[in-house]
Figure 1 (cartoon, rainbow, N blue to C red):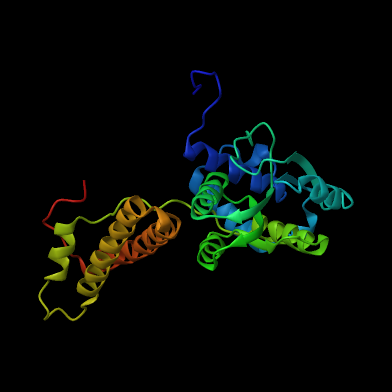
Figure 2 (figure 1 turned 60 degrees about the horizontal axis):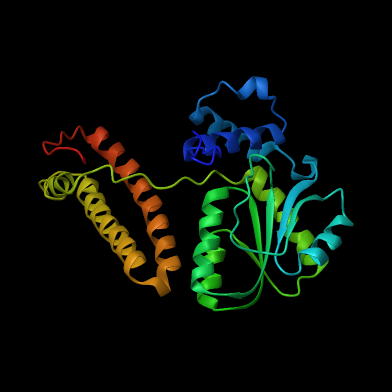
Length: 278
């Protein structure tokens, strides 16, 4: 799809698929062997490759360096051509608006003097947008709360001025994550409706296995907290980054419980009379 300015726009599904294909090709698979695989099959190959691929066998990582010290950072990294190739060097750290399909990247180094809650949210958005691409934030000043949120999102941190040793270590970590980390996906909407969870929670207690009741109660609490976090994200600008993270992570936990609850329902032969989630 093209925008009014004729820029190509890709769906999240397409971007995730292309990212999976890229990872597998870099891990040694031929594109002709994997291009026709389903998304589920690609994920299975990624998991398998994560146990067998050697990060040392991956070529130089393609890196973007953004921020006021981009010249000195790029100069330090160019002394190690076997480790990385500088694709982009730009003095402005934000916004990150370049097209990674035109300039494929494996890692992003961002130098920001002062990290505010608003910048924290922008970095989280960048992390979500670029998926498994490695990301290092070099910062001067920041609240510990914001740093904790960034760490939880898989963003590496280094206090300015970052040494060459710190930069090379971050790139080595990029390689390890690139090969072995599972693809992170956004949580799907709740699988079970409130009426279904209430029905499961009220099953007769004389049934030997009370897992349906316990799991239904746990799920209802997770869904409630997930919604609470989403509401806080919208109304409390200062804590938006933290609550955005909580909402996503609780959503992933909820999906795990939903999967196991469905296993219990199938094993116990439970038939729900209430309508599924719209």
